[in-house]
Image 1 (cartoon, rainbow, N blue to C red):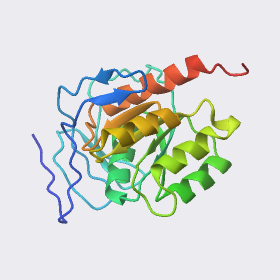
Image 2: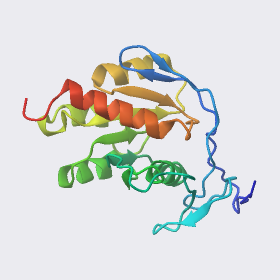
Image 3: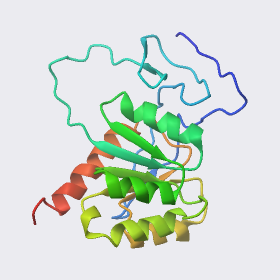
Image 4: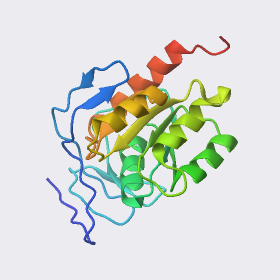
Length: 202
């Protein structure tokens, strides 16, 4: 195991995480551990097989992956006022083929949604200017976003708040700390389910 040690006090945690909730009331397994990442300004441990990406982030390479294997590329918008969380999310998703943009709050998130098409948005609940619940409601109020999958990711402990997020149109809940090892596959499943529920042109 090759280790990279954090160089500031903030450490993006999230290798284990809590079971995630879906809009249908089911829960995803939280078994297994994730890889570590350097993102933004923090280091956590990673396994051997390091490569530098164009966004100055070190991520673990996927050993043995067939270069001819085609993976659907999805576009993700991460809306969170914590730059460390956003950076780690971008690294975790980026290493598995997602294209990721980040926004620091709901206002920036809405601006990006107006200018670009995304397949998934990962939204924090507690943010300045426009909070997560209001943002979910605004997204679902626009017909152009009906195929956009939404994951609410929060350290909030009030289950009623999560229920409200689901009622407003979120597709799933991920409790922080997020299990970064499970997130990419889970994100694909949620995107594909949303697309199946809302076919293009229907």
